[in-house]
Length: 357
Image (spheres, helix red, strand yellow):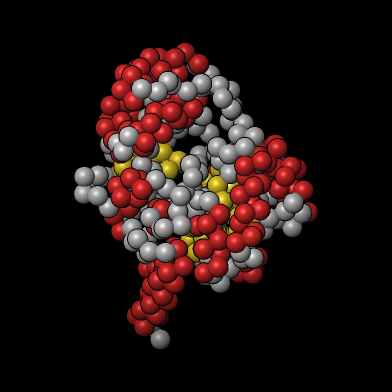
């Protein structure tokens, strides 16, 4: 690992920031205390809500942690597409007895206010999703002593992040659960993502800055594989989703290993951006018709998802999950970190024994 990341945590294990409630102070604190790098997800929260969680996390641990921000999104080119999708969802609103949300709730996710808070009261790490900040912003974080990470899905995005001044890139393979963190949302590229190991090799040959690898990682042996392939650390999300400290809904946790949900796919059904989740009724019925309209679709379906959860209906929820979801282990976060670290060392030892002397 790079010296900066080595100084932050005992193990090269990062807990992914999962927006929507899963990655709160309890999970981040447990990971930090166990020797990993815990993360808060600031996406969909107000600036004040983010700051309150930071203060709560600091009361729980003196360990390292990061905060993830969503980049502001460009104006929607075709608002009428959202209106058509709202019409298609009218039956869902009637079924769950809840109104559809306002598509114009927020386009920038309070980005500038969150940046201002994080510069005024710095945290060890800040990462960015759905784009790359300006050089001025990244330089400001550098002056504040904050390590910056930009999530990328291609070698070109990684190179742009390096040019802009990012300290590290988080390379996200198509296997990852939740949203694909592309910098430009192009519907013509749907279903064309690159697997983690191939993408990692491409990025490693393109940039000189450290790399965090993420996408479908569930075991210490997989962490060993991405480290051997050139990553400096591994980021896991779905693996931590079932931990008791995770704020994910119980139905979501149970669905990860429920044989009723046999596969995942990338869908725009819930948010208007490609995101990997367990295939359920909502995805099957609405995924083919969902427009490329993020975050507008996210806000339109927000009430539906909440109503489905309240009704105990996993078929109407966004069950984000990576391709390795069936390997989820229901363990406290500290135990999971220790198990992953032991598996990592065992894999390294096995590889060393097989290496020619």
